[in-house]
Amino acid sequence: MSERSDANADCGNECTEALRQLGAYLDGELPGTDVEVIRRHLTACYPCTERATFEEQLRAIVRRDCSDHAPPSLMLRIESALEVYWPQR
Ligand SMILES: [Zn+2]
Image (tube, rainbow, N blue to C red; front, side, top):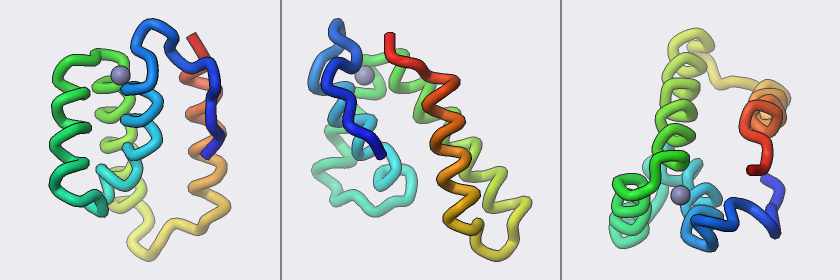
């Protein structure tokens, strides 16, 4: 994942941090305290909620349609597609 130094100026570091941990959050790999932080942020931040919802659905689709593990190349393609659909604002 690429770092964005100038991501969402209006939301600031919380968004950057939440989006950085979103993958681990959706995979259930975050410790409980971090999960709480992200949940709280998602409740308050609509753009991040939208992004989280989309990525969650994407994961569900990938899990359903690729019964064995999605190849890393596919995940990379999806992630770069996301960069296109969610340009810096
Ligand atoms: Zn946010």
